[in-house]
Length: 179
Image 1: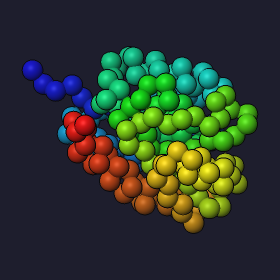
Image 2: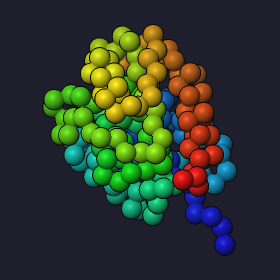
Image 3: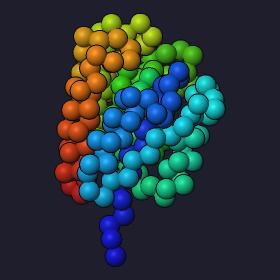
Image 4: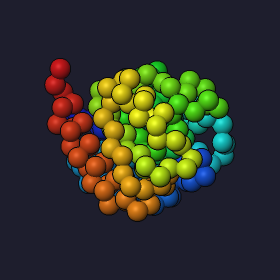
């Protein structure tokens, strides 16, 4: 009998796709770890946050992912999807890049993130999701946040993002069975 796998679900942003540079780089990094299955969810069929949230739930059900062995990672709207998913179903990890948090047009725009491990990475020069409301939310919830000299897509920080994701995965996996 083998251990059930750790699932990493990657959720892309509004104008992106599952084949985006960031999603694929993080997927490849996750797949370097033993017993990890990484899934890039395709949200391109809808721009509706609630529908994308339902797609995340469906993916977790499809792969029979145990919340205690599930790590969510998302960018922009995908970051909101991950945050909201962790609110409803506390997961092992929630890794968010320029997450669309504290934005009035999103349902539950400031979700209480209940993942065991969390990391937010945001760009100082983000012109899509303002950094200050995300900083405020991180402060209110005591969440770690890294602010980089980059824009919304964090395109100049890809190596740093992947490096931070690797460290985040190592932390989640090392502490998975600890109380």
